[in-house]
Image 1 (tube, helix red, strand yellow):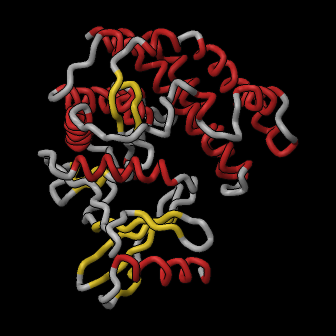
Image 2 (cartoon, rainbow, N blue to C red; image 1 turned 90 degrees about the horizontal axis):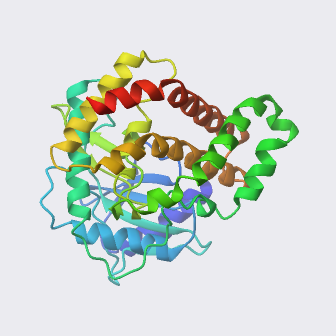
Image 3 (cartoon, helix red, strand yellow; image 1 turned 180 degrees about the vertical axis):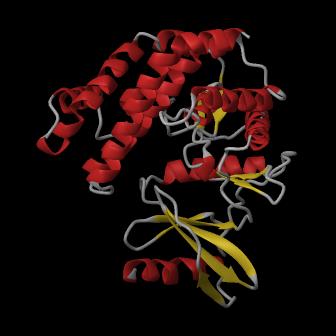
Length: 336
């Protein structure tokens, strides 16, 4: 906490040099440290990046957000604040990158209500439509999801193979889950040429309940956290959002109702091609594989605990197994 306080005292005056400010309570994120600042009776979010220290990545995220500010959304998006020098990001003496955003009111939705899920799909579709129009004069740093060898610098496919087929002692209990994951990774490689032929554009890349807010009416009122925005498959946006509806403990009828509600909302703005629809099963699995690799890399970097990476190993294996068990029903569902 002492280190965080020193960061705050170093960063905040660069944005608010003449204002009185104070820290106020609020939730933090999974990947980065998030703090809430009150200055001039206005609330702001201070984000200290811990996933990486790559200025190009943060500059690209902020460039996209600034380009989106004038777009006609029915929901809010983060607005990066500028320092007295006109910059949206700063670097602490210890090398951490940070930024300040206007606070957006709302709560993370449960995404259990079908009307709310429809609203989520509709917001996702609107975002897809607007991102397709955005021009940013910078090169995206993040690679597409299907370039899985680039998911994390510590996690090449060869390293994942060794880890999955010969798990360290601390992971032996997950031998079966790791085998499921590895088999799917190998199988996925055959689909890459087909995926590369599908429509590409800018995508948010991490649409889930923790990165959206709902208002008092239950509808989606904001989309947050554009950290992973990049040029990727258009349909990847859908696959990422849908992946969280797949729950081993949920009745399959409810799962398909949630998927239907989301797709109807998304389809009110965007019409997917047949190839994109055909790819959804692959891409939902890819999302789970990507998240597993992301947290494995963070574990090897010493950022996340062993329990965190174990949780995502189990989750990836469960979702892959669910899809393999239900793929025939999914195909029939898709044809309706």
